[in-house]
Image (cartoon, rainbow, N blue to C red; front, side, top):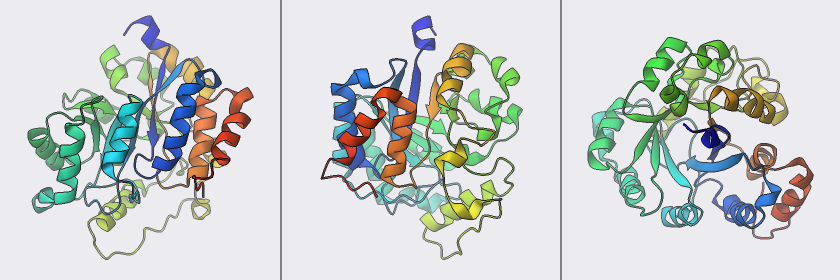
Length: 303
């Protein structure tokens, strides 16, 4: 990795299908007025899942936008599209799902930048690798790998282009500094998690989402973590011990040789995700201008 690459942060943003309308307004502004945004960062990918995808995981997908429109928008701006197929409970018979296979086929043959799949199940990984070799793979944070050595082994797997560690590993800087250059290139930090740092039910929560995406009739997972009932608050996420902010990226992670940063938010509204775009990409003196441009677009429902 050369020095120029070391100075760049590559963001992986939420809501490929869920926030198509937001990105269709934001991306033209991002291109036309690049001076509004930090020079040291780029949008590398946008991830998400349409509604009713049984391979989906992490969060229940609710995007209704046509896949062809999503793909056209991302290709226009040279941004990689990632299908979030991180269901952890798939069985062999689930691999025949027509909708999910059709999405893989479409995104594998997009003709633009290479697209990828965020994945949990090795069963699904083998299936997609054989049938749609044009796609790359991202090891999902839904694996909840809180053991650092386990995470390192994951980065050594050739199948994965990127690995998203559990956010509780974010600040183990001494260990992170010891990774090889190749391992650092594959590491993609989840920056803005709001879940309790000490939560022990994270895996069960993800499995509940997997069951719901499979159509199982099961009760909602009840979060027992402190303040869990309050839902997502960016202000609360900023106080999380695992939070990675703009200054952390610039002063700690980029100098250590890391360059990939994931922003969560698929299950939140467009207005909250706009705040992420403002905080992580937009220079402070232009944040109001960008916010007004987005809010004044009469075609965009931010709530």
